[in-house]
Length: 116
Image (cartoon, rainbow, N blue to C red; front, side, top):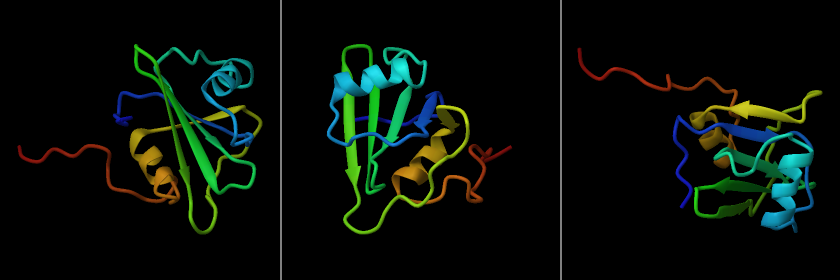
């Protein structure tokens, strides 16, 4: 299981990919398109061309995790744009993205002290 923690560096690829790609092909995209090391412990998020699915790639020190989420209805409406190859998200933003929500939406603070 991939657990998204605040310590994760999360990179969202701007360009869509062919959703049929596997671990090795996506790891190569991390190197070539994102100029990032797939063995670095980052969580990489890619979107399919149609926008109905996303793929997550992470290395945990022993091997790669590859997870896919395909929506049964609709598309991932929010996706970053810009001249850079990737966009950085914080952990709570990535969780919103995985729920097909808008990571830029107003959300509670990442951490709040419960008691003084």
